[in-house]
Image 1 (tube, one colour):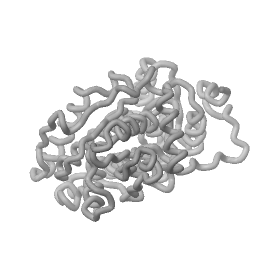
Image 2: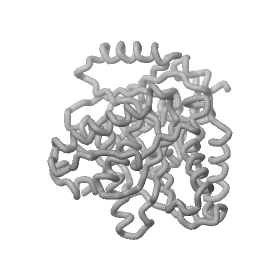
Image 3: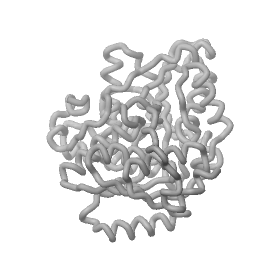
Length: 353
């Protein structure tokens, strides 16, 4: 039984769950990095290893979302994101493995080398793929496709999997962390650093930490624009998920957050979503050189840059944990003879740069 259900058995009855992850994910001491800072209390949570097929933070969310999809009898799912969306790829790969037909509604983003790799894997999964040049046209296209398929025939997964059910994946992760702390795998962190995009991961973590009785503060490092993630939206998602779980199991507490419980760090966003900053690039190289762990420039690199700043600024601030949300499992090999021109024409530009 997963940790959340062990603590709140009524939730095991009222929430549908579909196992796809290799959980718990490992905790690792950053020994070589720590020596650079003359400290021995730096750690990483390896959610990049959450699945042998495709890892990262989306797997935890999809365990609850797919549980609902399958229990409700849906055979098709639709989700959306930027062209290189890791969430879209996770839905495509794990959805295909679960026997679901997947539709991906994507929109343009600033180029980076990882986008073409994700698109190639999206296509190989058998997903139906659409691309729009702007977010506004993307919304129009998404509504059109949903209406064409039939709203009652397809389950729509929000961007990033950041629905109330998706948030439950990281509430469970917090209880998983508590069990690892109790087994003395690591000491209780003073602060946990994680990327903040559609907010489901960070919201779930802080809600789970408080419900589990842990005192760790969450530093959510912004990687998306403010219309996607801000304090008010964060609190709305937090309170809605908290209320849902309390309604399903009255023993699940109603949590009141304080300013000491979490902070949104917007100092590493740079020019915006998808734009790789110098700080992000340097952070990626730092972790690669010291621990041979790979990050990405859009999400985890920016979050790790914030982590590095904290590690260097105050060496008496207690144990720090970086939560790695980026998949590090090699993507499925492309089919022999793959040609990017097989994709809809709008995607071709990501293979020509």
